[in-house]
Length: 546
Image (cartoon, rainbow, N blue to C red; front, side, top):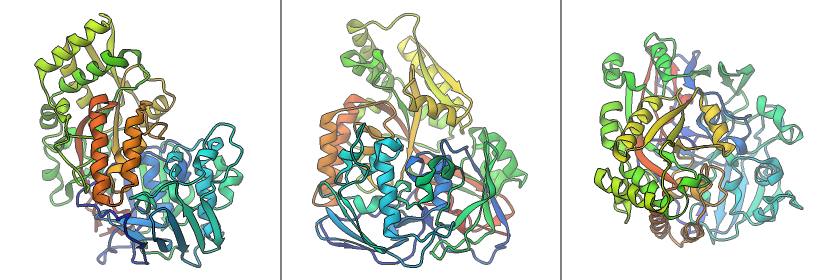
């Protein structure tokens, strides 16, 4: 879904009986409380307009995700280093990594007063999985027994066989197979609980959700395309107690405007400095900046439904385009060296990462090889002389216009074709085009980890039918390798198989990996206790005023 940070992530072994006991954490990330700052201040932070209504299983982008992680909390969360800790879970137990018994903490409730029970989780997961509800994150439930029956068109049932409510505090989960990272996923947005009001009128609920997190929407809190205002939830009793009087996300159309507001102390926290300021932001901000790697990457999707990129000719063209891009030149000239050239499809901050996967030479700049591959493709299926290779992107994001224009120029100069940016005004507009499968060329893409696992960068994006599979990629061999990795008897063996799956991606290139992300952010003179977590997101609840 969204973007990330440094530190090795802890992955839980599927070979051992697993019991998580209450040990503190946060729905997004956890940080220690402030160090004595002004807790009466409302913190302002940058964001983008959420793509959809605020429903957990239908939120898979940054603008909605950062709100959801504050107004909801799930069974587990991830601390600043990416380690899983319990939130609402009293315990999560298994002896075979296939059957789980989950007990939740007592006396929890949603902001509308309804108790949070085992049924709140089971109903929410069933709602998220059912095809009739068309939730973007439905794929996250595919490993639960019975998903196949609820996720098909004209399904006869809307409840998965593998979910059972035992009592108000207990439910069980049966998977279709043992999976090495299932417990690690349970802090992701899709697995949050929901009150009954969400099912009565999902659209209305998404505009004004009743959550159970450390914050809640202020009255009339979501002013579309302007701001999303959150205030502390007085009924929250978890480990992410707000150290401030609220968080207001200000919606910006570009990061330059947000940076100007930051310098003027009209914005408290900015999570991405624009390219125009990267050369000087550390000087501008003194000691109020961060430059930190996180679990995220940037890619370019070339959809499988594009006629010119199918078959043998299409495979050659994908390789040629990848090898025509001088990634390091773009990183040096536009991002001032603040990124790292991609060697595969995941992130170096994750356990199991390898920069030596066979076939990754296709990600290296090689002008002569790129020309040769393009010529080979033309012999099979000539590229029309007047055809333009377009790269669609929203231009309200930091550096999008600049780097895609540079990348298009490199492709044009190397391959002798016309390539250019196809600009859209907003991220929401771009996501709508991608979601409707109406791309006529490539599109800007990237991933910010939902949970710290190699699989999270592979299954949701490239698995057949996955919710974030923007290019409609499908390869049964890849799907099987993913399944084998999930059912491995150890995390290490699972990671080995996931990297073997990446060898298939390096041949097919459903997307072109570009670089690994780092967060270059800053904060105003009016706040303290600012930190960024493993996924590049500020730990909002810990920020205080000065």
